[in-house]
Picture 1: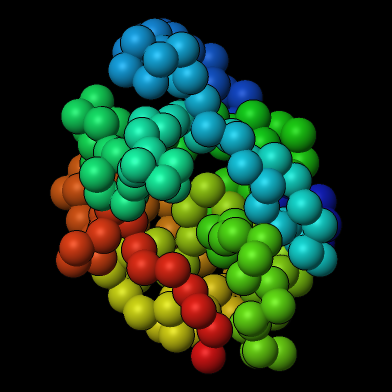
Picture 2 (picture 1 turned 30 degrees about the vertical axis):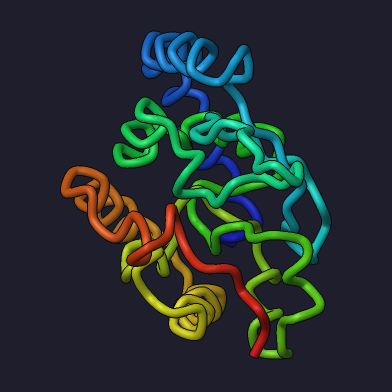
Length: 200
């Protein structure tokens, strides 16, 4: 009952109210990143959602598009702008995903949507993370976020899929607020976010 009816309704209500309340902040960050990223304040990328269905995720663009002499993008850590670093540290880059929630591609809470190229690399256990909609935050995010290993992250994701409830989601909301306030577990050492997943 919670999954099929209450969770989607709660998602839409909270996403709508949040966008209205944060609209001034949304506009300010958009303008700041517009100038920092040569007119590109948003980052759109295909991500797999529930049942591995692809959708376009929207985030604030925190990295520029600088390339090396061969035309390849520089490492993430070198492309992260100063304003982008602040936006990512405060998790403001996640705000536009509220639009994905309103579209029905995402939920407020669930396993984070990863890259499509990871799909063939998952084992049967890890694939279970796609049994529910991906979320803006999730159980893995409040238990280490980018500071934990891929194996740990998948274990937390699948545990959430088999145990989620209204009270667990509520707990994740409060733990997420704490993580954002303390700016914890934003990146692995030496990485802008987290190392690439190369399979098991």
